Length: 384
Image (cartoon, rainbow, N blue to C red; front, side, top):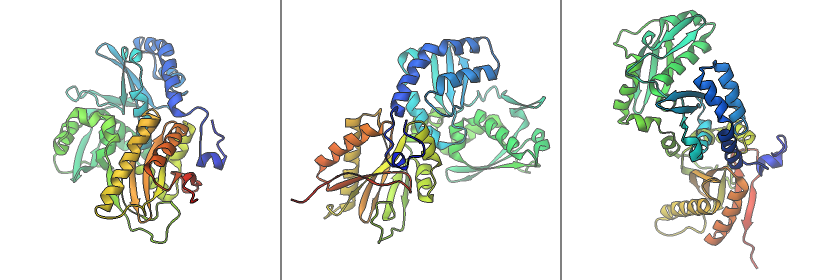
């Protein structure tokens, strides 16, 4: 893989082993070696032993592994958790979708900690020598359109406050995940407060939380647990453009849409936590920047959007879905922007050169979602 401290590699990280190949080889290894993991599950081995085996199977793909296993209705479950980090969503969905049929004969693959059966309402966690269970929690939800601020009271957690408050909140988030699913909790709970005494209003039980969210959001259980659906949820945004900005760093943008808003927000803040995580796993995310002065006449905005969509479709068709995932784009005063995740950057850049050249555009630059990266000119027409 590219050297960690080489700035040129951060601007153009052409990994020796890109994520697409790590996933392909990782699933082959999983198929060969997962028998030991199944044996441990059958024998109800302790969590530490199962965790060590999961790391052996998954660390060749992911630098950090957060996973759980189980057995349900004749098949084993592999649950790939986000642990509250949306940056894990796209790589985990990519990994899941490429599970070979041989693996799927034995395993169900899930992205996001799964909700327990709300009819049983018997899920629990251990705190020291004491168990905390679903029936110990009271919950209140205050809705703001499609998001809820949630307040929770649990008498058994009070001894953890305030010195071990972070532990208490971890327990609450985990119990919420078991009640409504990790993806639902992450997407639709915008704030969480752990109370030191219950509120006066009638509370919800944890077993009532998922039906409550389903009713308010008009979504069924399958939709709330579908990780791929969350990858296709786009957020539109508008900005005040800098009319002097012509450097391709998106300061000229006045409107856009994004399916990976946390990545874009980090870019605006000049941060790189997500990009650094991606880098360690052989993943790159960035955008193509191209001039818009050639788009004139009626419905100029529509022409710009159609062009971006055509370029994205062309790149995906040529590079393949194993290499390229479109995550949105933006329009600026001077430039258009096409945003993507590259599971194999070289394949994507090669395809982009071919597709953009055929389009008649004058110039295309690739830029990583890092403020301190250098823009890479893929091609530029030269006047004779």
